Amino acid sequence: GAQEAMDYDFEYKVLAAARTNRTTVHPKSLCDKRIYMVAVDGSRGAHHAFKCALAMATGPFDKIVVIHSFSAKQLAFLATERQPDNIRMRYRAELSDSPLDNAIMIEERPDGVTTKEHVCFLANANKVDLLVVGFTQEHSSRDHARNGHILGSMVDLSMRRAFCTTVIVKPTSVLRQNFGASDSQHCLVFVDGTDEAEEAYRVADSHVCAGDRLTVLHLLDVHQQPYLPTTKQWVHIREHYRTEYGVAVQQVVKVSCEM
View 1 (cartoon, one colour):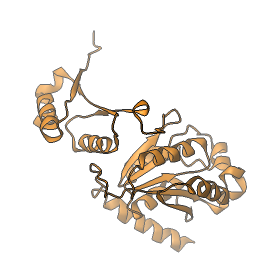
View 2 (tube, one colour):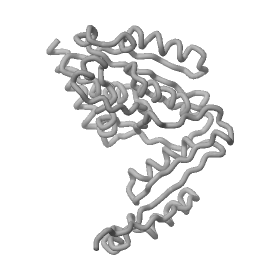
View 3 (cartoon, helix red, strand yellow):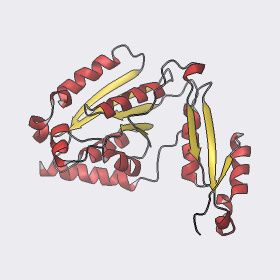
């Protein structure tokens, strides 16, 4: 009731206040264990995100956590494939042959708490390493009631409120199947001298496999270079990634459109 929502809200704000303690993802070794949490709602976009999470979890000790958040008040309006019990059965079947450690969490959220807040709370509370969410463009209030509408605005909130790294999976994303040379993937990372960009590089580097390509780019604004702090200047960025990671950062010059 009201007290449950109040307690939840307090705990959520405590977690939000600790946002500076974000999960840091480092290059992966065979003995590492990573927890991948994927939010599902019965939609194709969410299921594609689930498939992507499975493709990313390549370590023998990795764990997949499938999370579905629902409101009891909305159950009567949800399509059959989006009912909590059906989602549980679907992903039990999907994971039945997986060698990965896994868990399925079907969680009723407290009154007054949105789905996106609940998912972010669960990701933080379970100390996951990566939160994987699908991208959908369902926006209408009718779709919200009928379909549950978890993953539209979830994408934006998860990037701002989840302590862990968030992976956004678009419907057109190509998933790795066989981990062979013919199934290689190309990962592109933009760096600008900030800690956040460097963390993005480390995450990408920790997930590339043999045969994959990882391209690191810096968008260079020639006119702004004299006014930037040293750490954000092109020469420093190039040398930092070369000495720290042995990576050659490619330069892309920003072209001014002013007449």
